[in-house]
Structures are given as structure tokens and as C-alpha cells.
Amino acid sequence: MRRPALAAGALAAVLVVGGAAGWAGASAAGEEERALPVPAADSADAGFARDMAVHHQQAVEMSYVVRDRTDDEEVRRLAYDIAQTQANQRGMLLGWLDLWELPKVSADPPMTWMGMGDAAAGEDGALMPGMATDAEMERLGRLDGRQAEVFYLQLMTRHHRGGVHMAEGCVRACEVDTGKRLASGMVEGQESEIRLMAGMLKARGAAARS
Image (tube, rainbow, N blue to C red; front, side, top):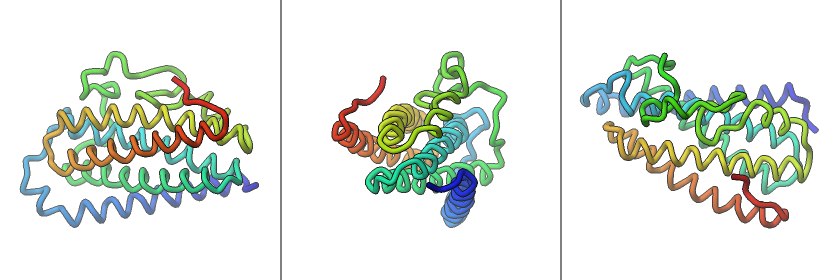
């Protein structure tokens, strides 16, 4: 069993690598993006970038926690893939905010860009749809083996459903084509993983949580 310090180091490493990779992609498209109107700080484009970066950060954290709590290669492989994908996407989203010279933090509540500012924030750390609470994150860190696998798959299924909801909102409301394409890809990728996790839960005699 790996020590928590190693898990934290792995998490920090993937966030740095993901951020660098995302910024490289954003920089490569820099000239094209600069030719387009810069979205306003309160636009759907900026709101999606800020909120999804936070949403993704928790998915990366959950994935590295479960990799240290199970030896099951199927779950560890899925967790690694989710962590890598979402860390890279998070880096792109933050890179766009830098490119647009927009703040990464807003005074408005999360999900305001989707008209959900009054209802989105939950309790105990669940800031947006699908996000795990602080208590759920602590519980995941205490579980081992099959219990950790099932709880992670349940949490991540719910997390993905919230992410799909947000990404679909950007597909409808965002104006920057690059962001809309990324959001569309998120919908496709996370829906595919939801189906995969449903099968993994079934194989473990469990079901997704509401």
C-alpha cells in the first residue's frame, strides 16, 4: 500500500504536467484565439472554464486516492485514464483564461453562467452538480479493496453526470469554437465512461448511486 505522501506527490505531478500540456495546446492555437473576440468575464465561456477546472480537479484527486486503495488493475487503469484526461483538460481551461486575461476565480456563485447560481452550491464541499462532499472524500480515503472500488465508481459516475450536464450547457451557450469542441468531446468521453463504470459496478454486485 502506498503512503498518502506518495499519492499527494503523484497528484501534484499530474496537475503540473497536465497544466503544462494544456498550456502548450492553448499556446499553439494562440494566434487563432487572439483573432477572435475575447469573451467577457461573466460569459458562459469564462464561467465554464472556471467551474469545469474546479470540477476536474476533484476527479483527479479522487482517481489518485483510489489508485492507492486497491490492487485491481481494471479500476487502477480507469482511474489513471480519468486523472490524465481531466488534468490535461484542466490545464487547457486555465490556459484559456490566461490567454483571455480573465480571472480564474469569480465573485459569483458556481454555475451562474448556466443560470444555476442560486441552486448549484451544495453542502460540505460539493460546489457543483455531481461533486463529492468532503465527508465522501474522507470516506473514500479510508476504504480499501472492493469497498474502495465500488465507492469510487459510484462517486465518479455521479461526478461524470454532473460534468456532462455542465459540458452540455457550454455546447449550448459558449461562443468560442475551441471551447465548444472541448465541451462536446467531454460529453462523448464521459458518457462512454459512465457506461463502462455501470458494467464495472454490475460485475461487483453494486449499482450507481443517485
